[in-house]
Image 1 (cartoon, helix red, strand yellow):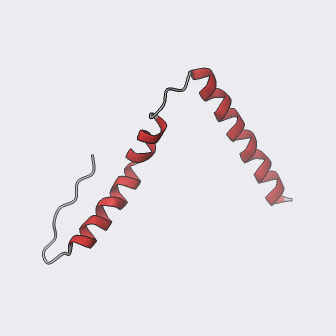
Image 2: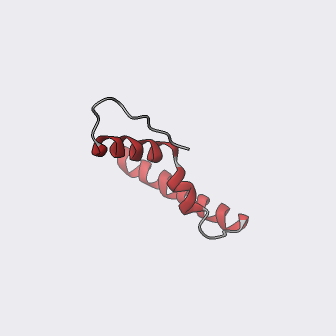
Length: 64
């Protein structure tokens, strides 16, 4: 869980900005999005394999 302590003479905008940064850095939102729907293990493996193949292909194109 992300906590932000109030600093002296700090505006609400800057507090909110720091809180949002901490939430993004902690990965809470990405976890929630990933767990929004059930994905079977076989489907997850298939998607990860596809992502890995795309990464490898992209690396080969940029290094040539």
